[in-house]
Structure formats: structure tokens, C-alpha cells
Image (cartoon, rainbow, N blue to C red; front, side):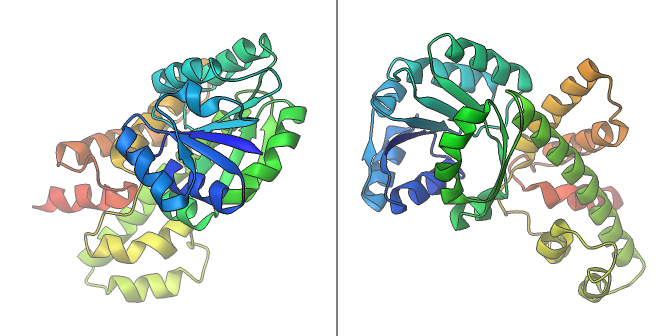
Length: 287
């Protein structure tokens, strides 16, 4: 099967690599062409100068770009190379609005669309262990699922177009609260004179356990914030969730508060720190 992958960031680069390793005929595109060329040299696939060229003849076209505007722009260019019956799969974390827009636009051209944001971070992408949340029609999902399993440990269709993005918003809402709680707990332990590693060893075996605790608590204690998903991107995602909440009447007081805490981290120079850097804000307040 011919597939295309558009966008070779920290997530897209390894995801496309898994497709090539699984035996698909992969053509990639990246805004910075040198990165696409480097990918092709590393993985043995093909690269193209434009999204339309990469998408030419592909049954599935995956993309993982930056935000709603990027999704619209890259999708429009890719469509010039896509034929009726192909499917566009958007792995970008974007709004449900743009997902529904694309679904309607592609439907008129006989092209399927799935909004399929991912969770699992850079490590999940590199290890092929992502969770994929999918919105779209059942027929498109059935065709795409075996391909997406190439880099996923969990994949599920949640409903029609936009449902995948809505699920990803829930994911980010939950992460924001968990990381803030972990940051406060670690800060409290330090202030109380406890050994953070000992505390984590004990409470990680009980009800306080979380992925964030097991994978980030000790690096947070050391002030290490270079583990993938950046504060800038988290703020983008939380803005999408907060905007959707205003439309559907949800109350997200904790999410709104943590979003402002991330804004403080940005002002500390932590725009590219990972999301566990909420602890840095608390420690800076003591200085």
C-alpha cells in the first residue's frame, strides 16, 4: 500500500519510520525539505517537495503538523494529489471545528477523513506505543486502523468527525491537573525535609500512582525538563479545550488555572521545557 506522511516533527518523524519498517511504500513531506531528505536516507523511503506530490497515488495520507491553520493549509495542498477513495488522517492536535470542516470538504470529493490525535509523547512515537483517539466514519476507520496500528498500542474510534479531537481535549485536561498536583506534592515534600525519591517509591504503589509520577517525578526533583512535549504546545492544546468548553458549557476552572501557571513558566524562559516544569514555577516563587 502506498501511504504518505506530512510533517516530520518529533512525533511524525518516528511515526513515518514505523510505516516504512512495516513494509508500506512511504513518501514523506516536511516544510523543511532537508529533514525529509534525511528521513529518506535513514529509513529508505521516498520524499517529496510538496504535500500534493507526496500524496500522489497514496491510499492513506497521514499528517502531523502544528495547529488549525497548518492543518487547513497542508490538507488543501495534499488534496491536489489525492484521488477519490483515499483517506486523509490528521494526527495533529487541533480543534473539533477544523476536523468537521475537513470532513465536509473531503466528503464532497469522495475522500475519507479521520481526526486522529495521539498521546504518548516522543517516546511513544519512537517506540510505536502511541494511543490514538479517532473521529470519523466507520468505513474510513476500518480501512485505516490496520495501518495506524503500526505505531499504536491503543486505537479507538470515539464517534463521528471531531470526536477524536474532543477526546484529546479530555486527555490534556486530565494531564494538566495531574501534573499540577504532582508538582505541588514534590514541592511540599521538599519543604517538609523529606527525600522525594523515598516519598515517590512509597506513594507510587498506592492510590496516588500515575504515569506522570512514575515517569516524571524524579526528573522533576532534579530540575530536568527536557522530555518532549513542550509548554508552548500544551498551552496551545489547553486553549483549544478552554475554547470548546465555552461552546459546550463545560466548567474547567482547574484547567484555566493551570494554563495560567504554564504562562508563568513561559515567562521564566520555559517555553520549550516539558509539561512537568510546573514545579519550576513553585520553586521560583521561593527565590
